Image (tube, rainbow, N blue to C red; front, top):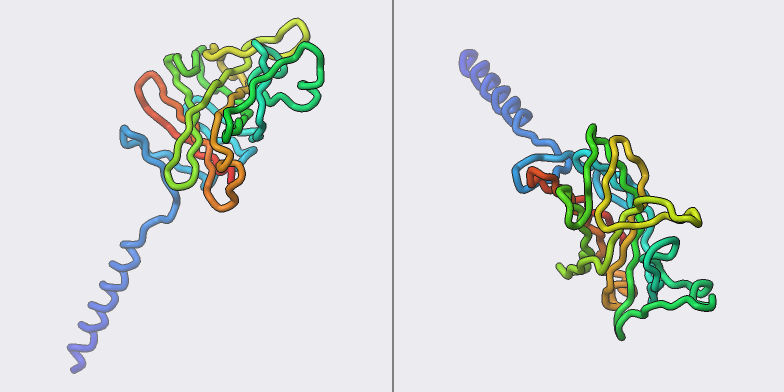
Length: 212
């Protein structure tokens, strides 16, 4: 009996150590198509900054409106036509289709690369946006642009594809979607803005912001 007892204790100790060694980390990860793992910091909210390669993206605002300003560039370009804008003589605007509403977003983009790079929907460095709503419904941007220069009145001028120099910081981005009214009015269904980056090598990274 004295010989059997130490053997039983040794087996129990071995099993205990094996169980401890099998525990895994609960840290969230995102995996890109090429198998690269990017550590995330959890759910992204409005105001959060997240990194995708050499780029930093900060979602600064979300707004619903039934009208978009009819501007070729400048302060109100791709922005809601508010009451002040509508009341000014000479201003015009577009309204959403019946049963729809516009969802506008603003953001800031910073570039940390060591050489100049172009980014946009048609550039070697791609950036794209998508709304994901409820049980798998998706909506693409109606229009999107990046601040590129300043006009004579001091307001930013916007382009679809823009060249960034190294350490170019806090360039404003803006765009909008046209979505069903339900997307705004629903209090229970999830609403997310998904930002997709793809570099010249084809590495794709997704940033997912919870709007609701």
